Image (tube, rainbow, N blue to C red; front, side):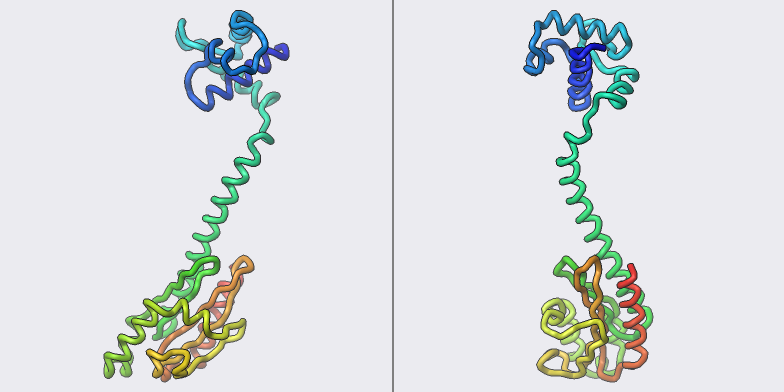
Length: 236
């Protein structure tokens, strides 16, 4: 296979990969890649066909690569480096989406695990996203304090649905469990409640894992449960 034939084979394969349409000599001349006549290109294509690199599906059709042609292309003629920038850009976007989805899944799983361990609300903010998961509202609403005072119950629901993300931006949270117990300036809607929170990091970004419940919560038990759940998140 001479240099022109190699270039023809590569061009035909690249065009066929993009279009799935047999490639004729007219298209090759129009590509502007060859400084020769249409007749010369037809002769070279015929030579490639005779050698088994191309096939002609129909008498009047152009040529398509054969298995032998693809093997020659892969072994000696393709240039992956030319596609690297485009592929890397797409890969980085997809990788970012993949890890964001995994961050959400891990935060949600930690909240689900914590909510099964405690009779309170478990919550977590998700790194890289303005999002907070919470589970266990039904746990809290079954507590005597909330059964006796519907306004307190509605205040908890309001904080969880509308204000929890902003609240977590206001409070001080680090890698030790912090306690906010009935503090009106922190929890104006639910001053009869307590909030426990601890920071975790995922791929270098900060998230918050915590518990919200009545002031009567079991702080010792909840501290251990929260610490174990945050340690699990940090290890992922």
